[in-house]
Image (tube, chains in turn blue, purple):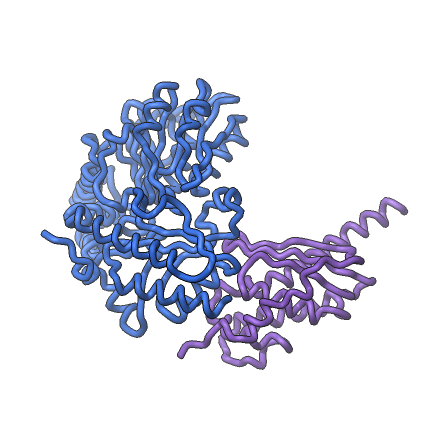
Length: 409
Length: 151
């Protein structure tokens, strides 16, 4: 099996429909990847053949839907490299997952306990903890950033203290593209009695994971960045820890017994899945991950890495003061390139590339305002790649950038 | 061919810098920002009664915001805040309108006609107006408080 990006692109109807009238070079994959037809088909099939609420009905549709839903959980567990599907909690996305974790785990925090984040976090991994800080008087501290956009792990020994309850950081930055050495951080955190949470929104789309190997305690990702439907995500947690955490959200589907004064809860994962879950979408997400697992992953990574390098080298070769964030070419990074151009606002770049070249980019803070503030940048432009991108996309981007610099300067 | 947002007129206006320097006699100021894209504009106004005598503005943002700020700084002298609000309202209406009529734009703003097709960019054009309206409103609130304290 060899990887062919054109064959991969053929599985996505959107490139035939939206790319029909005018060019579409979709380089906004870090925000949302496109969805292959077979994933849409899997969801349609479920809704036309097995649609029903899950977990409690005894009729045949309910049983079939529950089996499909729990089957999806098992497939996600397989993708994450974990044996126990009960460690997989379905959420509606990474943001929701971090909120569930922060609010649930937060119930166990005491005043002056500490949570350690980093300067390169997405707002989704800052705000939930700040809410807990305001509610319970805990302290939120931050690991600094290295000059090449990584989390500075050399400061971890100092900043993780006996009061640190959890180190919650990105596994891969959505702005700098830097990948965190999870295992090294896990060992420091665990030695001090703290948990490690990884925001895997940008790393999960890269292919099947080995979570036990990362040694993290919690890992989160979104389905929509991993070729799955919107409104899906996963909070994975070690079962021995999840069993000790009280739920922050209550409702149906998560209880053992409800009394007027007191209620008891089911074991994880159901304890953290109050209300009717996004059944169809969870099945779609599992289908997407299974399809992704079936690709020539080594070939896919080689292809995306080459395109990423082309973007970096192409930008470096353009006339104009362009600053590329993150690790240098050749160093490990996610398939995304954020950059700033002196004197030109990211939204102007995005607009020109969209209008004149059909290139879809993302401009602004990418939900990482503290990172941009530290770098004294009013925003950056980001090109992010997925398996279906090809050299034509990169050509369109680089030609567009060249023209953009001429027009907007 | 699509309507081009970045016409020479907009680019020229975005590059004007004669309104950037602060005003000596400024008596009210405000900063407005758009958290979605990071546009930020700081305005200083010299207000005489209800009339704006002059305006300075500094924009850290996109070309549309810069151009809109430059035009407003040049045209605002002698206008009352209600007139500024009126222009802002007409401009917003023209950007949102489904009819393809450049004439519906306030005088001096028809260059923003192609922007109507890009809803996410409307706020870039309108941000300078918001800053001016906020500056005057805050100045009035503060003046009212002072008057009450004195009486």
